[in-house]
Image (tube, helix red, strand yellow):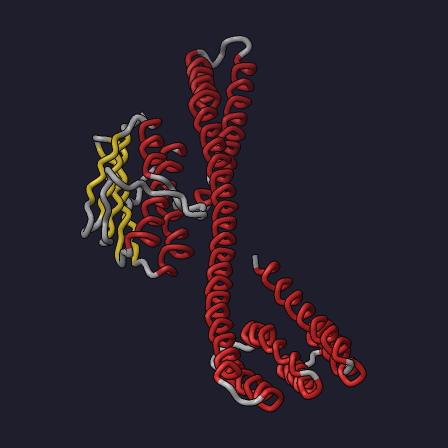
Length: 379
């Protein structure tokens, strides 16, 4: 649309200039008109190139155009009609109050040209004034449309960026989920089987240490023990990188709090028993659930204080996440991934808890904080 308006402006300027030249030929005054008309056409045509590549100020270029226009009007009064495309050109190039002020000046010059050539009249004054008013109104509308187009383009860029981040987040989440699933499956099958084989071979070795072939049983037990160590290493490698450091899940939560939550202005308290030893699948689930709840507290709830509490009692493993944010209506709102790998949807939390055979208790409402409690039974 804006390209069409610009080409329309160029066409209007060229059309009026051709009419002025044709009028001068008809009245037999072409000799004095050709020079300013050609100069005006050349400067207008090459103006954009000169301004962009030679660094010439826009004001200088416009001043040259106005001088050449007045030169043309001195010999051919019909050249005054070129003031209308000049109105739009000035409003397009000159920002702020200076644009309308220059339009008023051009209007006064056009009125003076008409008055000097054809005599002073109401029509000679009203015509340029009406043209200036129309140009101002169209210029205001053009700027409003341009501003709206800029906002829409910015919004589109933000949407594209958010979509790309969401895709990357979903891909990363799917990868981590698959790694966690593999770690859980290996832990529940291969690692448990190797542990059982090791214990059975150890029992057979102790039952009759002098029996023939006991050295083969011992070698088999040692091989099973070595394989179990390797298997546990594979499980650790498949676990989320946040859990690869010391102090298990509590240490991972402290590191995430120091790098993500506390820098965002959220005062987070991590509470966990010293002897807490969570299975890797549960530790992974609790880490992701805590990340999702904290992402909601930081990005949407406007919370200032929050806590993450881990527990291990007769009822099973527990995770309690609380914040003092503005809360929400669980029936109407779900936490949506917002392009961050920490973002975790409420539905995804329910599915993860359900996969572990646990329970989820969410206590929140608009205007008060959120309390999320997860219980997972012991294996």
